[in-house]
Length: 131
Image (cartoon, rainbow, N blue to C red; front, side, top):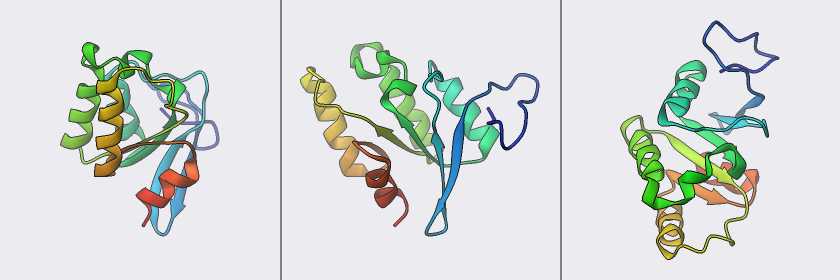
């Protein structure tokens, strides 16, 4: 999954707009494509493989809504991959509308670990990931 400025996608890759940021010597990939959605753990692993990154920032709309329903198991699968591959994932958006107490607890606990974070801005996430 490469973006236009870096090069055309190779066979099998998915085109997406993104920015490779370097802050305090730390590389972070920001997905900046409203049309791109992570629908599976394989989509996440493809990004990690294609960009050789360990820190990824995306907007809330870039992940399948099933992520926010803990009953689907999708959030757990993403968390497991993040743990196995030592990934840091930041979600940008408003999460005030989440009604599930379990999901609100998941977000709270994730923000404490600083491996998977849910914040309202890129700046907040970079402050955590790039110390």
